[in-house]
Each structure stands twice: as C-alpha cells, then as structure tokens.
Amino acid sequence: MSEPLLEARELTKRYGGVEALRGASFTVHPGEVVALIGDNGAGKSTLVKCLSGVEQPDSGQISVSGTPVTLDSPGAARSHGIETAYQDLAVAPDLDPAANLYLGREIRRGGLLGKLGMLDKAAMRARAAEQFATFGVSLPDLDVPIGALSGGQRQSVAVARSVAWADRLVFLDEPTAALGVVQRERVLDVVRRVRDTGISVVLISHNMPEVRSVADRVEVLRLGRRVARFRAADVSLEELVGAMTGALTQEDEN
Image (cartoon, rainbow, N blue to C red):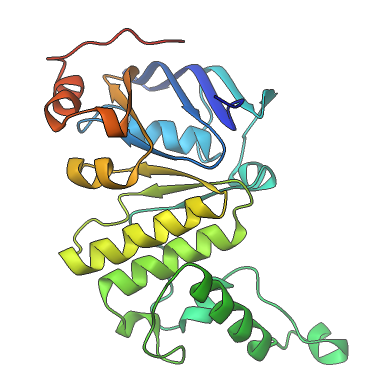
C-alpha cells in the first residue's frame, strides 16, 4: 500500500489512575475510508482526540506522510489538513446551512465594509451551494435555520462543513447515530463521495453492517490497544464482534 497519510504508534494516555490508551496504534492511507471500532471504553474517543489535536498523548509517535508531528491543538491538526465532525454536531441551530458551513471562517465583504465586519453572505451562500452539490447534500431551502432540518440533513451539513476545510483527512464520530434508515444512507453516501474526491475518512461507528458497507478497512481497539485490522470486504460480522470482545485474536502489526 501507499505510505500512510496518518499513523500513530504506541500511543499512551492516562487520566489520573485510568489508562485510556495502552500503546494504541492506528493507520490510515490516502483516499480510503477506515472504520475505527471497539466496545465502550476501548479508547476510540481518546485516540481520535489525540489524532485531532484535542488531547496530547503521554507517549508514542504520530506521523503525517511519514514525518513525525506534534498535534498540540486542533489548529495544528488543521494545518495538516485534518478536520473532525463530532457526534454532537456543534452546529448553530439558529443559523442557515451556509452560515454553519462558514462558522468561524466567514467571508467578509471587500473594502471598508469588510473592515467594519460586514459579511459577504452572497459569496458564502454560493460557495456553500457548490459544496453541498459536490457531496450530494440535498437541502429543501438554504434560507431556513439548520435547526428546522431533519437529523440526516443536519448531519450531512456537519460532514460537508468538515470536508470543506479538510485537505486530506476527516474524522467522523458516529455520524449516523440516532438516524433513520433513509437518513443514514444519505449520510453514508456523503462519506463515499468524500472518499471519491481523494480525502481520507476515519469513521467511528458501532453499526457493524454500516461499517462493512462503506469502509475499505477496519481497525479494532480493545482495552486501549489496536487488536486487529481487516479488509472490510473480507471480514464477517462475527469476526468483527469477536475482535471487539476478545473472542477472536489477531496479531497486531506495529
């Protein structure tokens, strides 16, 4: 395979007396969807926080395209083209989809008006419409507050927002949680479209059929360590569950 886009080796992380990561490793290559799975308490959230700059590991190494890096803030991760869409969405429900897409990155108008803080809402709306169209995000009206949209539409906007600013990699934390079947498939279609643009996706999910349907590879965490790696097309649901619970063991390649 190609050189890893992002690689973690032997990360450890303690919170007081709790060892959340016990030498965890993880790998994602350019242009692939990797599912990160594990039971509650396996260390998935902590690992993602370390790889997105929210937390810093106590030991271990993180590399981007083969070069060791220090991701000591979300800004540092973004400087390497890494974005994260968290499960709680972090959207502003009273703002429209375009305003949410540009939240914190607003486009100002030119000249004096821009210096006075006036926003170029027409430019943001036009670019947002292009971004939504690229990833197949179907919205009934770009003028309505995002809080008035369905759960699937809100999630799709959150995913599109992360991808809009991710040059290389986006982490998606349970993007289909609490969604219905139709809404879930819409979000997964957005994930596939993102991959097809060449941006890598790390999907954190508890939904095993969903993992097998959209992922290229699966990495399994258990008790703070990576315990198995599979090609999604070659693994059964029973094997995934077995790796998560410890019933199935697989030698880890560090």
